[in-house]
Image (cartoon, rainbow, N blue to C red; front, side, top):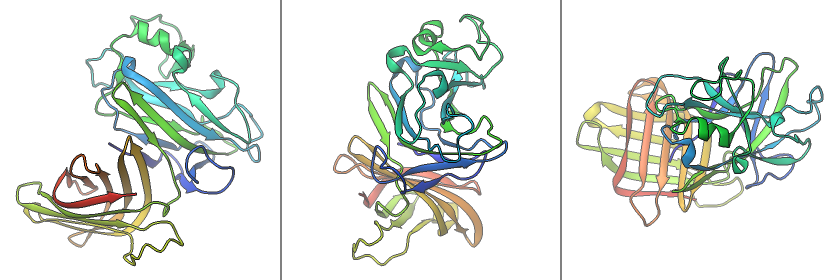
Length: 322
């Protein structure tokens, strides 16, 4: 279970509950860009998965005509770092699904993009020429998903730098705004659907112990309030806390900038991003928690910008996400 990362290569996307009702929930991610910026909504959790094993690859966009009138075919495009050989971790550029190559592009309505489309979806390559053993055509020449699987049967999402994301801007010097929701990624093992909701419209609580980074116990605590106006009987402010005496870590959040929820076939997950202090020194943080329900203990992950990171199952306590 992973998350999406925001604020890369441009202005931060934000969670927007306004406008037309999105395909899932009450909100979506809105991305605006100006000049030469290309912000994206990206994840790094699918590295190493073979393209032939991907059964679902979809996302939805809402493209308003107001303010976006210069080119009606603009829309957020899907990219991922690719390994054509199935054995390399070296950067080999990206495969790109561009909506205008898979028309029509609608305005003022939600539209779902199927980046596989029974093998008929058209993709381009960000390099100058498609690599061998495939047909060495210019990278801007489209190939169907089915053609890519035939020409590169071992191809996969690049391990390591496993970027997969939806980008807005090619660039667009006169500006552009679009909403994104309902990203779906599936294999034969199951499908994960990401529903991007306004911050504050779901709740998550965790408190317990886990194995420390260098032995001993580490304490986990976090709270993320429910929807505004909901009286859940909890007055605690949103926060993330973690102490790991064996590694000398004592972290407390000071600001939470985003919270993203995902549902993976009954397992609930939350990603909380923000800033805080570790032993009094300022750090950024990303926290991921997974509520496995009655199937297994909850899983907690914390990554700090000072280099500390930990992940593991709770040995006592609970994680509840709803």
